[in-house]
Image 1 (spheres, rainbow, N blue to C red):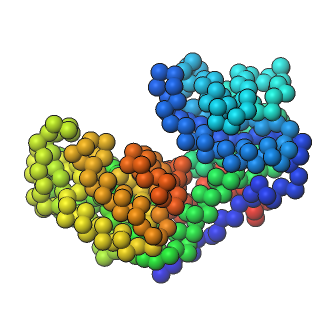
Image 2 (tube, rainbow, N blue to C red):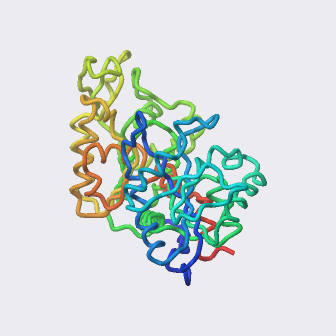
Image 3 (tube, rainbow, N blue to C red):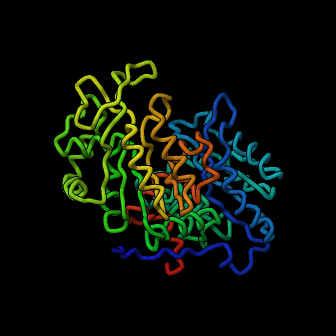
Length: 398
């Protein structure tokens, strides 16, 4: 059974008739990890390069880049975007001018300009739409055209995401276009069998699982989320983590999920007496998790069962790690199934967040069809929810 999802056709860069001489605001996501003043992973920055290079080749007069960076409370110096400007300069091979304020001084004439951290401005995340729009209008007044190259933030109604394109024409960047098309195709017209692998802790993924019931052929649930569902079935889960509050909010979904023969839960686990690499460890069946022990990975029997489903799949969606992959004794499930997904001859989509971190840590990212830049945004698409920043860029938008 297929589910009716309204196809999202976005206005793309090729839809704009003439970029020559235009000033363009490009909303990017350069929220990269930094340690002691050094960027640890610049893949988010590199992700924007095709769009930036395309615009430069088309003859734009200036690109104004805007990004959020961390979660500032009071203009913290370590969350200023200077380090990001330096990093992009090295990546793109052209100077990127960082500016603190464009106010009375206006913009410099440099072709590539990076603004200060957008979240330093209260209007960026304001809950008051009029305040967001006021800030968005300030940014829009700097340019002729807006481009969204921040898929990872597109589920949020922030000024730089949803206000700027109210005032100037808005288009999807090449990366956003690629992610939306890949995820849309996977849930609207997938190659079959379609297998979804859902892990992690938070019970909010139950919404995605429920939405996938009529779409997927098999749904493999792992991580603490599997313990949540087993607990709802009456199993003892010992001291395993469980998002009880999230489960309470979704009891009707839990019932439907646990009744579905498409949903496969682990039959055994690797359990430990502490959340530590030096803990005592043993393998037990799903029915035998004792008090004082916590499930931190799926067991070998479950790995083999899940692997068989993955090997037969023509489309795989992976959201959330299988176990606590950051700790070596509990990384086998994630490692083996991650490799199985990478070896698949079908379409493989990794839903950002911890799943993306896992495939990068396993050095498997280049073997996947798509490693999404946005766990939250991609999950919202799987759940069938609108992404407000992208709705404004739809080809059929007013």
